Length: 355
Image (tube, rainbow, N blue to C red; front, side, top):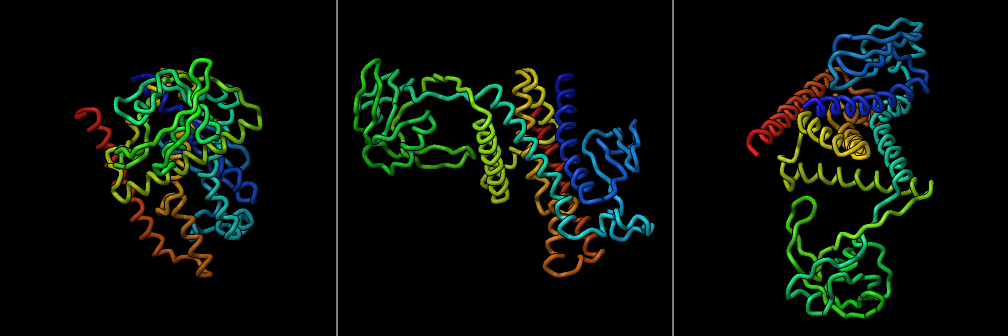
């Protein structure tokens, strides 16, 4: 329990710090005054004031905020503060300031993946056969355990995932496998068959397979600085894309809402990753950072995405959305977030006591 709580605070603290740092740095870049930079909500525990900014740690560690000068459009403002007022900045600058928070969470994930790839390289699953299903195409074609598939139709196979993708995309046509068996190279013709299965979202799918399982042989490949950078971009993009698709499928009802988790689930997972090692915990932080970025980009009032939506409407209409509409939208946004929090807490509790 202690490990879970400590890991949760560390993970959340890092995610919040980078998110708010994004807002803060871009606000200062565009000359907007920042009154408060807070990690946490509620009463101030301690901090330090530098210039007009109060850098503080607050009592409730479930978020954070950057309070900018003139942030509220209808707030009374001293004339001398107008040059550093958020409201009085160009619309494009305000858009960038708000978007910087979630973008910095993506940057954090990118940095973490880059460091992990640079330090540990990447682990590649060899296309080595470990099990052959009886009466499958592989069984009938004479494939054996420990065979390594090194090419398909003359195209080199990089790893197990690459091989599986080539087989899946064959549309059922005959394939010529180049197989390494001990010190001998063999050419084996095989016709994949359609088989029911499930994708990563739990959806029923049909795919072409030959009926083999991996032997689990892996090797470590060290990466250069450039490869580490390109791989970190690919990893961040891949997880971001997967997260967006997951959200769409949740809305469509394809993916069960039982998969949603709240603070309790995050604390448990953070504790598990911490016990498995620092590298696991750091990777988990990167995953959460991407999820936090995508969540904040959702066009829900109160979230950054809601503010960006209002800015886009303002750009199209040529005038700001009136305060009454903003207030109603903010109330709807708060209601949605409260209901979401209640739901994920319910999921967390149900997972603990009824699973």
